[in-house]
Amino acid sequence: MDRIKHAEEIARKAHAGQFRKTGEPYIVHPMAVKKILEEWGMDEDTIIAGILHDTVEDTGLTLKDIEKEFGESVAFLVDGVTKLGVARNGMRDLDTYLPETKDNFLRLMVALGADIRVLIIKLADRLHNIRTLSALPPDKQKKIAKETLEVFAPLADRLNMGLLRVELADLSFKYVDPKRYDYLKELIARYNKSAARSMKKIEEEVSNALKKEKIKFSISGRVKSVYSLHKKLAKHDQNINEIYDLTALRIIVDDVTTCYLVLGIVHSLYTPMNGRIKDYIAMPKQNGYQSLHTTVITKDKHIVEFQIRTKEMHEFAERGLAASFYYNEQKLTENYKKGKIEHLPTNLLWITELQMTAAKLREGKKVDLKKLKLNLFADRIFVYTPKGDILDLPQGALPLDFAYRLHSEIGDHVVGVKINGKMSNLNKKLEHGDVVEILTSKNQIPKTSWLDKIITPHARSKILHSLNSRNK
Ligand code: MN
Image (cartoon, rainbow, N blue to C red):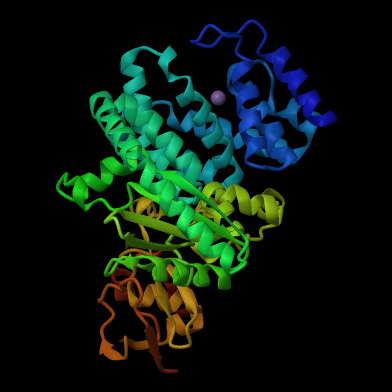
């Protein structure tokens, strides 16, 4: 508490005399960022860095001052946030955000890759800025809102920070397309109102059935967000009748076994719709989201989606990476400095890749930026070894990417691949759910042509390494 109070005093002094566009004293902003980070359950260093995040760029305070007062770790985080800010300046529009402006992109990469907590502070910063966006002139509003919708909300999704994703997306969608926003918001409100009474009845029926089985649970309605409805309607030719999850009931229980038990009870009460049972517990979404989903038709012909999950799954679905920080107390900065790459859950392996890339950039090594952009924003697929181990790869990954992810010794000796039990070839793109068996031979050595048969930076660096050492 003393360190946090101390940081507040220093920030207050540093920002004295500065004002936000809203007319408030500037300190309101870092204090709001602090509050958000506290709500996310972040560690003390991150909260302190949040309080100080704008001081180096906008006030006389230096990184040296911060390091002296709060230590290396806080200074490291503030530096990252500052670099991220600098990297964004000069990116006039989204088209130049990532691919071409190499210097900016390098800085962005180094800042992001250094410590994922930098990104979390940046997301908290953006959340407060978007909450107070109305104070800016309309052209700036649109620009920032568009950037938030296209870059920051997807990032929040990648980190499985569901609450944040919804708030960022809905707040910025309001500025990007105000008419559409109002229309959909009204539509959702009307639908919920008309469904309210039958939903209450369904909730009671299910609650009674669960109580009979002596199951401990909590149940609540979940309202669909405006932006996700907008996206879903686009997928279904604007046909609202094809959207089955406008209203959903969420049931939260203590353990995984009970989730399946509850699913059975729901299905004994109502008719499940064909093909609408989704087991994201056994097969988590790419960002790690876990839950059972089922859409049922009630006796009164109401269509309702049920989402059934444990408390832990719910916590992770709403707070994502922030939640896992809270539980694991990961100290990425320390490990990063020791040269260790942090072991994150498989679904967040792309962060590890980012960190490895950043480490290379710092050592002055060349990195293929086009490939990186793909890694950061493309979706991930899950594929399996014949023994059932799950590997997480970027979409478009090829068998050699898979082989090198397993082990460079396996990668170096690939002679062929079986996909789902059938012989295939090294140019075949892997698909979500594929079972991939790599065939090797002791006599095989890596070839230069392999560089065209991979898309991950990991495989690329392993192949180059092998080629170089053999050339020597
Ligand atoms: Mn800020």
